[in-house]
Length: 297
Image (cartoon, rainbow, N blue to C red):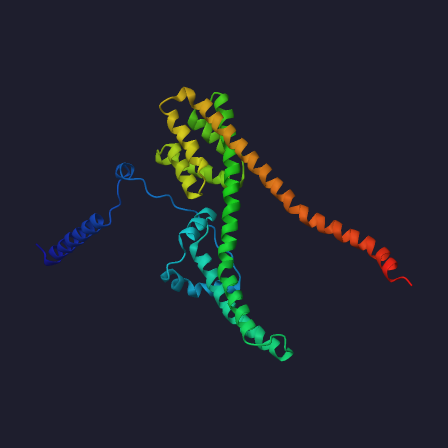
């Protein structure tokens, strides 16, 4: 055999062996292996964090805050509810620390020639108070946003349950009723329910399971109650309509009661400003007469 031909055949055999080793090492699993394997965790669609120049500069301190164990459990739960990236939250806290530490001394240097701040105790107290306020400001904002999103998710769930009952009354099955109910409605909450049901349909996961996971993600216990009713529908499908109807009615009554309680609380809070305004009005009317009676000559 020609030496050139032998060398070419040897090189081809070596290349084929290397290709076979690489294909065996980095081979992707088959479709059957993917379907038979455990369900992969759902990927969270996080909202991009919007911030100004200080927040972007605060990203330098994100690794340090991560090393300190932040965010905590409560902040992590609120971040999951708000679909926010933990990096943006930590950047806000780092920027708050920088502003809280550097801004008061600069203002003190500017105000010291005017004699506004006398003595070292008051500036130090104001400095510490301002630094603490800037440190906890992102937590207060995050907690308020998480509370509003949970309330919006609960309102959406109440309407979603009513739509499911209407679809069931129209003759649709459980899966079809869930799909039809999620297709009607806008907002991020209904979009989250719609995406969860679509994921359940694609991955062959029961709808009640993804709804329960959605409730755990957004800290909404009502999802667990709804998923329990759907879970029972698999064993007793004839009673699912009455069960869901009762659950939808319970959610609606609870939501209306909470709205009424919030309205009454707002009314009570408004009573004090009204009383003070009325007292001021009486003083304004009575002052000229009292002045004339007491100081007339």
